[in-house]
Image (cartoon, rainbow, N blue to C red):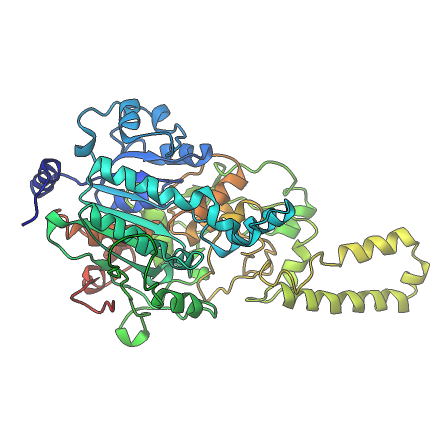
Length: 532
C-alpha cells in the first residue's frame, strides 16, 4: 500500500477536477519544452535559465502565460545552483507551499559535458594546460552533476510527473549510464521511470535530431510511463546506428549505488513505411514561404553588409497562404500565429564563401567541396596563365586570386564542418555551435548561395514563426541549437496528459499537419511495442 503524501493527493484531486496541469521548466533556455507543454494546455509556473539572452527570449514569449507578476521578473537570469524553488516563487510573487505549486517538472541539464563534441573540447583545454587528467577531463566537468540539482528540485516540489532531456551520449558517459543512475535515484523518491531515444524526424520535424528523454511518474498515480508513438517515418543517415547500439548496451551495474539495478530503458523501434506512417517533413517543405536571400547579389548591391543583424527585423512571406503543411503549422501555431510577416530572416556575412556555396551540390560536406574547389582553382589558374593574364599579373594580384579561391581547412581534420542541405530530406542536427558559425547548414538553393537564416533554423527546430528571439543573431542561433524541438515536447506533453489525470484535449497536429487521429493518440509503454 503506497502512502500518498498530502501535497501529491491535492495535486491529483486538482487535476481530476479539470484544472490545468502546472509546469516548472529548469534549464529552460529560450523555451522549447515550455512551448510544447503550454500548447498542450499546461500552465507555466516558473522557469530557471542562467543565460541572459535565453532568459529574455523565454520571458518575451511566455510571460503572458506565466503565473509570475511581471515580464521583468520572468526575464531575470537565474542560477539553478544558488536559486531554490522557494526563492524563485517569492521573486515571482507566487504564494503558497512550494510542494503544492508544481504538477510537472521539466528540463534538460546542459549537454556539453555529455556530448562527444563537448568532451573533445574539454580534453583539448586540459592538454593545453598540461593537465594530468586530460583524457578524463569531461568526467570532472561541473555541468555533469547538474542532474543532482534537478533531483533537488524534484524533492522540493514533489511533482506528479517529470521530464528530463539530454544527448544520447548520456547513456555512456565514461562507462556510466547516467540516465540509469538518475532513474535509480528517482525510484528512491517514489517515481516509476523510463527513458528512451526519440528522433525529431519521427514527429514530422524536418531534422534528424536524436535525444534521450526520461519520464517519471509518481507511484501514487499507479500508471505506466508512456512515450508518444512516432507519427512519421524517415531514413536516418549513417552514424545513428552506433548511437542505437550504445542505447541497447545498458551498463550492468553502477558502482557505489548499494542496491540492485533495475533497467529503465524503453527501446522504440525505428518507424517504417510499412507502419502506415507518412514520410517526415523535408527541408524544402520546412522552409516554404520564406523569401529568398540571394547572398551574392545582395553583396554586390550593398544590401548585405558586415555588422550586427537584428532577429526582430520583420520580413514578408512569399505567399498570402501557407503552401505546405509545415508552413501552415509554423504560421498558425496556436497563440504564436502570424499574418503576413515573420522575423529573424537574417544570415551571416560571409563574402569569401558565398561563391563556394553556389558551387556545392546538395548533400556535399567539406571534403567534397574542398576537392571540387581545388580542381576549379587549378583550372582557373591554368586558364589565366594560358591567356597571358597570369604571366602579366603582378605577385600581389596573383596572390589575392589564389587566396580568394583557396579553402582554409584541412579536409581530413574538418570532414563535417560544411554541409549543404538536401531539399528533399530532413536536415541533420542543429547544434548550439550555430551561434559561432552556420556552415553546418548551408541552404540547398545554389542561387541563394548562403547559410541558413535564424528563422530557417527556428523552422527546422519547429519553433513557430510567431516565436521571437532576444539578442543579436549569434545568441539567437545558439538558443535555437540548444533547444528541445517544441513539437517533440508537445507530443510528450499530450501523452503525459493521459496518465496524470487531465481532461482530453484536441490535438493540433490533426488539423495543422493533417494527421489521422490514430497517429496522434497512440502511445508506447509497457503494454505496447516497447522492448526493455
